[in-house]
Length: 315
Ligand code: NCD
Image (tube, rainbow, N blue to C red; front, side, top):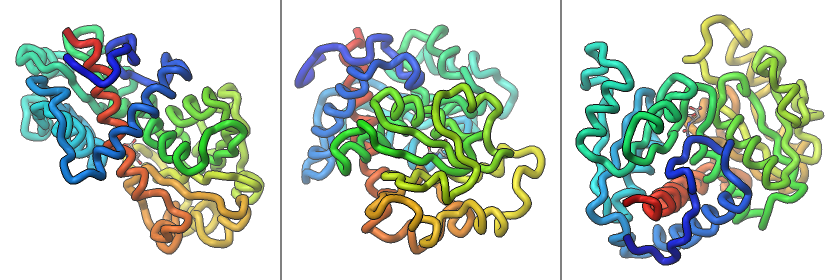
């Protein structure tokens, strides 16, 4: 397979998490993604880098951005793509994760992108299958391409990460986005803060080596980047917050709370957003502060970079 620069980047042959990546690998992926931002803005968005290769998207949980951007990324690199609709598959007849994946494996894909409700699902498949595995979210564990696309968005706006104050706010407990982001940002030299009500902070957060705040005013003070998280009601068995209205009052990002952050602070959200719950609409839609659309664009570029990097190790 040919590539502009064939040096290996993802040495493991998989992308299972930010854990296990080195700052050199992260920087190489971000640099590679820059060329795909340019390609994505050109009239002809397609190359033949992955021609003849097959990518399968296997999503056991709902997804808009992640699944479509992996599909688009693969297509722009010339690969064939298959989206497994789990709802219509034998999974609904009780087939196990391993059996489903083994069936797909027998069709000889080169890359399997998997999203699953259980932490460790992608890692398990990487040990059982012959192809490269990309984790598109496993339970509340990791979502590495989200952290990489967020890092690309931040680096393009702020030039780097060193000493940047990033406040990750909201439902940390259920968020794989928070876990992957804090690993990546801390590794690259940013000062990461978690800002959340106690009920939405995991007990082990004290050992993550980041600053923890339980009120927005102190947590956002002099933040360069305010990263809001979705309140993940579908993962909540009981009542973690009194009501959405009450949550917005104390934890939702509106103009008054954003004013606590550094002047010129930028706002991010991985999507999907609950408007009026964790973020006010006028902030989400304000192109001067909100990077939300940019994050989606960077998502395609990052996934192209990841597929390119993995293709260098394919036989
Ligand atoms: C996130 C996810 O699935 O973890 N979404 C995404 O990939 N952009 C965050 C979320 O669902 O809230």
